[in-house]
Image 1 (cartoon, helix red, strand yellow):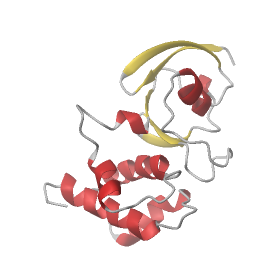
Image 2 (cartoon, rainbow, N blue to C red):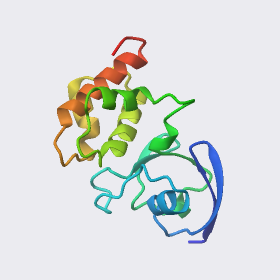
Image 3 (cartoon, rainbow, N blue to C red):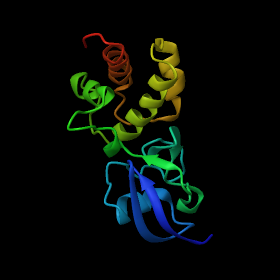
Image 4 (cartoon, rainbow, N blue to C red):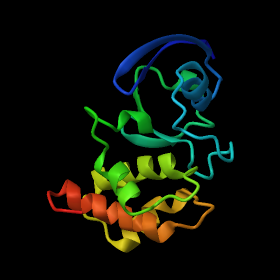
Length: 159
């Protein structure tokens, strides 16, 4: 794969020089300094490295940066707008939905996609959609509560 010289991340065009076969995760963390996205299993199974590419969740640990092209990449850092956390980021804090927090950015990125597709998910829909994200600490109920809380806030209600 050819050398990548440009990537669009969090609404900003970045110039760089990266081997197209290099994992997107490495470029985000090492070249761009966006360390919110975590390396977990390295096999795309745990979800810690989840980012959005044109709004679609992908596992950045095994996605070659050369496959991204002109698409827009959104990381956990890109959810905050004008000093305001995304409602799901705030809900994770409010609900205590993190323990070691290693899975948190991937969980939030997946949860944002869920709430975009389904603004009022049921418990079963949340569990089903989030199934590919693993939390070693086991705070799944708090994560589910945070997603429901964010859905309520995003619909104009109070947490």
